Image (tube, rainbow, N blue to C red; front, side, top):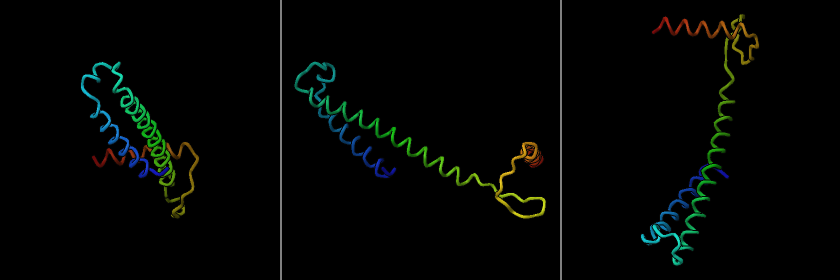
Length: 111
């Protein structure tokens, strides 16, 4: 399911739950053994469970989208020793450590 459709479904279910909750008489809220309000309470509880499931599904979808965008942005362009721009990952740990140290030095100098 798409994120926008999922958000719309969550909003519809929230509105329905609010209407159900407001239709429950006040004494029934205090006394859950009242037989008249049992079907309404049952619908409200099922709606609450559905909202929780939809919210969990929304979180999973947003997390997947976030990871996908991070993967796209992960490709870092840098200039090699010949002055050419490249996307190739440098696997040398010492190079990465020196690059991090240099960027920290530059930030310290600027601030």
